[in-house]
Length: 439
Image (cartoon, rainbow, N blue to C red; front, side, top):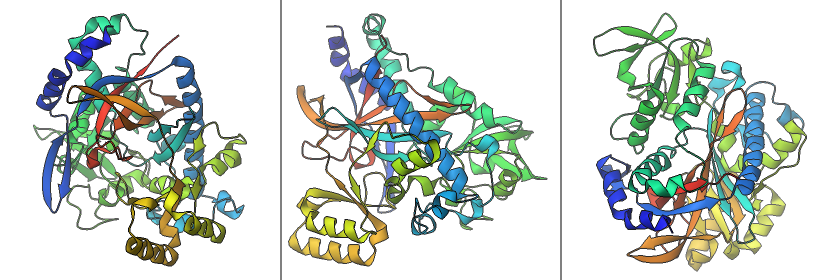
């Protein structure tokens, strides 16, 4: 079996990944720590027909979410028609009043969507969450595949495998589609950002300028990139890898030193595209997640192709009652947290912790969702030379230009702890390549 070659070269590939700087950095207790993002060379394999089903459902979901964002920052019909409660819009930490009435170029809000899924032991795929602000992770399977190809070219020559090297091209087309005229830049907070490797890697693959806030300046309602020789070059699109609140200190956080003063005004006037659009956080709030199947029916007139995990909103009295009665069998999530933080399993708490948590839940019901624990499938990984099963998810990437396109690859993350369902890199997880087979 030719895949065995990949397994033999696992350590070598991880050494190369480290040399290339494929690391994940996190701040903890005001200290920046870099850690390797461990790669496992046993790929996740998805057959053509199965991926075609995922592709159809992912396109449907992203189209509905884009229509929701357009509606929420304009007419708000979905609220007026009682499909989504007003409380879940304006109480969301991701809702930005500053974006009211602003339509991004060609009405594209989420140019790059990272949709997290798991496959249950019932062989059904479930959406866990939607990431529409600054989803990361595409670079990891890209470079891993590149290194695996070098280590075992015959494996890829003889396997009916979709080529994932087109992500840079897809991303470039997505950025060019909304470009307001000028260069495209990838805006990074800098070297100490957790995903800095990805920022630089995607800049290389797309031909975009990699820039920090100090490289960009607003003049006469237009954005310019200042090159090394001091020359000003017009910028028409910014793939920003910084959060909304740090984008423009004149509008949002005045203490931000990584944003660009007055860029929001340039965006408002249509003179630059911001990728993804500011304000998208209202659509990937974990509380809003509950309503996405209803959005699909409301905006598209279709039944959802992919299912949410069974979810309850303590905001509703009936759901609160269910959550309190079935607390030990549920996972509870803080809607404002990400990266595996703010996730607790009811059966892992002490009696005192449960009492404290339920008190908080009753006091702030909008702050949490509860979900049934999906018994999702294990994938084999190599651990100390031994093949062992571990929980794994899939982050699928959907890029939106004229129409949504699903990248025929994805980031498969796995837990390195046999007792854990948390797969996030910030929580010590690893990653695999995702092989999508063609017919």
